[in-house]
Length: 214
Ligand code: TMP
Image 1 (cartoon, rainbow, N blue to C red):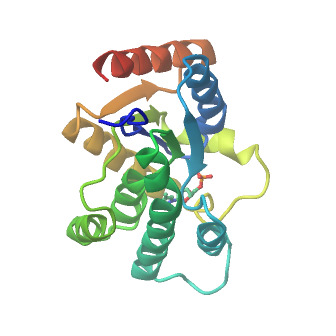
Image 2: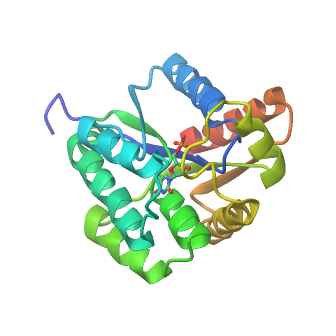
């Protein structure tokens, strides 16, 4: 073993429906891991590279032409492939931890749950683009859809997803919760309806537990 040997970084993702408080809590997690001297890269999906950010803009832009659901799915995975190869994998290989604002669970939730696309189609693309790579820890911030949308609507102009109906977000949330119950070891579900202080205590608990195991 060479002296420069280091272990592979951990891959942590944050998920949730609109207005759940992802941004505030991501900044909190970033500070928390920094204080532990863990080398960390913060990134997001769709996006995280110049090309993938352009694809993000295409996905979020409101337009008159209805975007075909399979086209949406493929754009999400096109961005993901670029992001993985040029940012995420090189960081993990160097021993840097990656904190990603959304990842493939969002595809299962939004394109699978929300749009109703066949889950096996998503599974096939996941396998094809990611191979065996899966997040090591996923924090799901969960809140009832109405409260979340009320919070999100205070942010100004709504993007193409935020403009969806409540029924769409109910399906997205249900898909997230179903995944959390299917992947208990990887997921930590945090009740985002609690006070920020309470939410952050729960996040610390989840991270401590994860750090103890790793
Ligand atoms: P956000 O990062 O500001 O939450 O916006 C990203 C939007 O993109 C959000 O509405 C969810 C959506 N999205 C998908 O539909 N599928 C995906 O795979 C990802 C990563 C995001």
